[in-house]
Image (tube, rainbow, N blue to C red; front, side, top):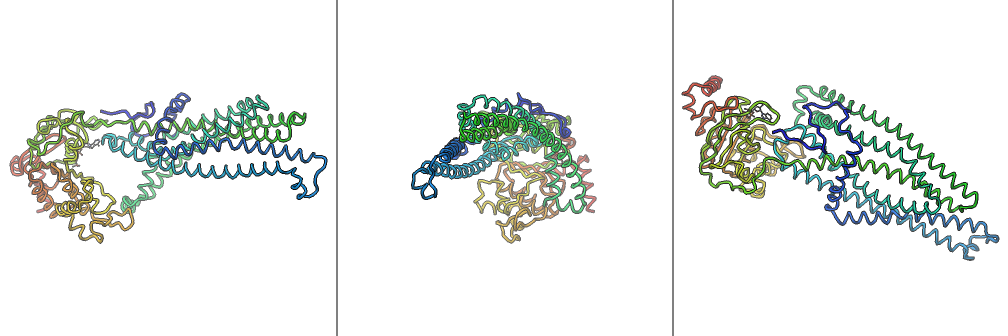
Length: 636
Ligand SMILES: Nc1ncnc2c1ncn2[C@@H]1O[C@H](COP(=O)(O)OP(=O)(O)OP(=O)(O)O)[C@@H](O)[C@H]1O
């Protein structure tokens, strides 16, 4: 059941592989950008919910700051007018002391003090606002990252295995930190609007049509900005797969996980070439856009500058005719200049806000992806104990996007308390069967029953909680040895007795006893003082996770391939003893281990080819005995 990954209403589903860099979807059209403004509301709600105090603080202080420029400029005008009056006075005192004692300077001194106080206040407010903004934006980044992780945790495995979903996740992940400039920008816009209004009020009083001239002069710059921002977004959007590949290549070329193989195979050159090829394509596309943007941007700004000088000439002329005072001239020219800069900034930031809102689509549309594997409205509780067991009834499953059935017509029962082994060649469908049993996927055909009821009727959390599964590609957590076991039941992380019991059961206790830090020892090489383990040692630790869970169903999907023959034998013998009373599945390619199971299912090409005990299957002289003989011959 292929699903559609939402991306702001655009259909970007395309065949796997990637669009060439610079392909024109999405368009980032005006309609699309205006539509994206709806994202600002949930975004601002997210900011507000993160910290009401900081958000309100930032806004209030910004509003105070907003009116300060016009007041400062006006005080400047009063100072100049006052100076002009004093200069023109017929009898001027001769020394500074006489000036001061005459009282003529009182008004000027007061105005100076005012301007000084305003400058200091503006500086303090500016610093406090940027402090608040940086604290707030860090908190918003953290909060949205947490929300992203929480949401990702709800989604299906199917989602994670889909490359388009990975692109979407990558875009969303970038937005958690990437959009923080947006917050400052929106708040800044609110502040600038108030400042513009205050300057405009002054200008309207003196020369209303100057404002019209100003707007006209700025329109081309605005349209240009909007256009290039949209282009930039669509370039970014279509390049997500390449960007992920770029990150992947960089990570592969330089990480602890890959260093061994990269060195031995001498892959550095290959990886670096690949990186350079991708990065060069990125650079070329970026450069093209940057050059066009710079060219057009320069032209549009020049139009704005012409507008400014026309207005300046007009004000100067009216000052010459005596209609405006020298103070008026400085105030008006200053207001006009500031207004132009502010409006230019505002118009471009409006356009960039609209584009950034497009980026928010990536984040919010990720939150809209809903899991399909869910608990029903009135779920059944997992039976304790399991009475009859699990029954596969004609189960078939195809991976999304695949024409081939990974398993089909599977019908068998895993009885309560039974240890069942699955054997079969690579790709036979063993892991898929386990994924279906644990509801990582739901069957496409048929159904799986637990004690007579469809698995889908049970509460998903308790169902998964009742299963201790270790896959062949289990995770090697760069955590302490104890925590590596505790992840099997993270709620019991502080229960050291339980951790040690699980370790004994999987023989991980012997591994841990040799570690310098014991259970506290950091394992894996990623962090300081980490100790690397051998493949088999990692597996023993991972198997302990299954015991840590103390679950009703135990499944080992071949996490034992790296164990030496004796260890695997012991691990499985113990697994058999410990799973008494539990239903268990073990998957292994070693017949010495498989033969311990109560019953063995032989899978071939997604179907059950034979079933029985070791001896029964040998007697049938089918694939099982053939594979057994092959392996036995290797030891003779
Ligand atoms: N995530 C996936 N998406 C698409 N196809 C998959 C996926 N995982 C497995 N398959 C396909 O399903 C089939 C069964 O795979 P499965 O992993 O169940 O085999 P297996 O018996 O566990 O093999 P092995 O012994 O190698 O672990 C294979 O043909 C494989 O290519």
